[in-house]
Amino acid sequence: MEQCFLSTLNSNGKFDWWEIDHNSRHSDRHPIIVNVAACVKPEKESECINAKGRLDSFLIFVVQGSLEVKANHGVADIYENDMIIIPPESPYSFKSTSFPFCYLCVHFTGSASERLLEKYGIKTFPEVNRLSRDNHMQLRFKTLFESFAKNDDLRIREQELLLERLFIEAFRAARNKQLSRTPLLRSVRYINEFYAGEIRITDLAKMENMCMTAYNLAFKRQMGTTPTKYIIKLRMDHAMSLLETSNMSITEIGECCGYGDVNFFSRTFKAFVGISPSHYRAQAKA
Image 1 (spheres, rainbow, N blue to C red):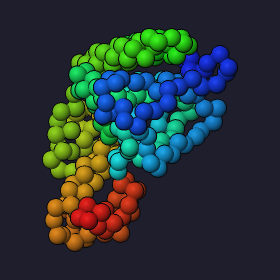
Image 2 (image 1 turned 135 degrees about the vertical axis):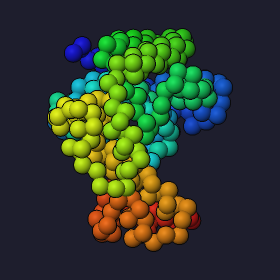
Image 3 (image 1 turned 30 degrees about the horizontal axis):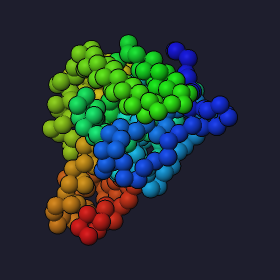
């Protein structure tokens, strides 16, 4: 693994960062502003919680280890070489799920930030940008960090260009990752069609002529999560849709999503979404 760099410290040994302009997302004064760029390598397992979210976008690129991220009622498992973008004003929390752990991050804003993400096909949370291992992301971060050490009138513009170079690298790495995937078309298609029924992972592995261990590893590599968590996400997405659009009872919705026990369905829903099904329905129809 390459060395992790931290260049957000100024000459006084303190974090050097730009004050967030509350109107920067709605003004052309600075199309792109990089507020913070840092390397985080905790000495012990830790959890980060921001109940209100940030005013800017929050980019995380995992160098080592893995973490679980929750934001806007979504959950995702993030692994090495994965990148996520948490949008502005999105309550979030994340915690390391393996150790040692290290990630690189950038907080950025500006009126052109959304267009920049769209330009290079960078997905925002809950979608995860899965990048190939043979990328140069750490090098791009390093040059961005080094820009913070400069104290001149050009560094805002320079950081804008460096952030765009980072997104170009992410686009290339995501494309390479897509090309290198081993397709599990048959089993994934089966899950997408029959997720509300009983699905055994052993049967899915047989569909792909794999043993359980090989199938689980291939599935996690391709889909970014385990088969079980993938099934649960499909069920919860369906449940949220029914809670928003139908008058079905909680019991009926649970049964439509593969849960014969309404109590187990409610517990699973709350663990995934953060609130109970009835609370979610009340918020959706308020």
